[in-house]
Picture 1 (cartoon, rainbow, N blue to C red):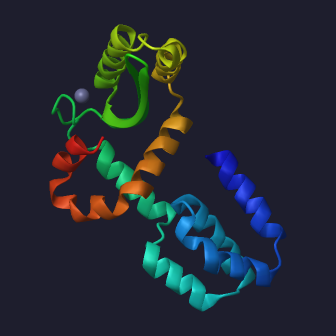
Picture 2 (cartoon, helix red, strand yellow):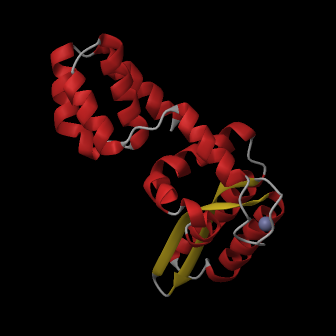
Length: 192
Ligand SMILES: [Zn+2]
């Protein structure tokens, strides 16, 4: 994602004012929240399209770094959705599993929020399920080792990638996080 953000930043920087504004007008609905932020930054830097910026910001409620970090702190200090314990800081990670039935193979990639202890448990569970149920189709033969290896690689996620996962989680779930703020433990339980 960082790579895509840097690429977008470079592309927008090279566009003329007119084409940047017309790009923003016609593509804003299809861009991810991270890329919209890059676009807004570039417009602001040039001091162009104030009405357009206002329109986009009110529609998408652009989050600045401070707001994102506040949300990350709130999530980290919530109850672990897996073991229901409070006090262990929560982390965000990706887990994969593969299921195969006859000729069909399903590969699932999910985002989890849990404490460090439960993360190990979740990865073990996903790999166990994949190992038992993943192989039994043509694609399963490839997806099963892929899922298991990536889960093992992600087991030792570096703090930078973890923060990236958490930031993306906040960006994509921001509206709901705000809506369910008073019952965040329950929201995290159902949505991670
Ligand atoms: Zn836990």
